[in-house]
Length: 143
Image (tube, rainbow, N blue to C red; front, side, top):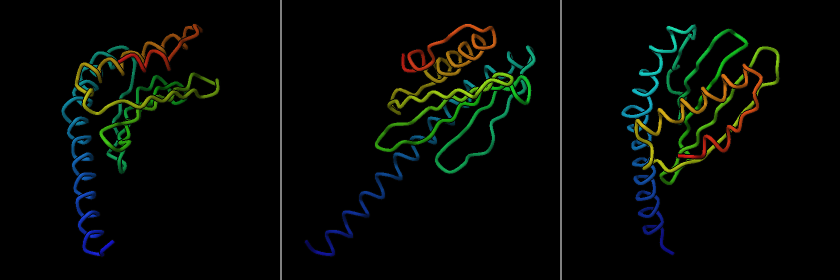
């Protein structure tokens, strides 16, 4: 195996990876952020504080907070090869935090999909506030 072939192969592979990351960033900007913004106006009117901290490497988080100890955090993270991971973490008062994770195809991530992820996680969060058991893993995966 020649060094030229190895170098050429790695260069091509790096370009493919860069393309995947760009597609992930575009999906976040074009689909996830608008879905978050759409929900933010409605939720602020109902007592939520919303935040979307700056990008942190290959991930982007969105926080829906009622109090410092009662919140839902959703983290979208690039998972490679045309896929992303969505982790939903919630904390309700003094209960132990809960966490769910789903991996999905980046090609499926449009604004409707992002809105559904947010709404499903928010429904699960509010159900936990009401003391109802929820099935977040099944609900999040149903996209």
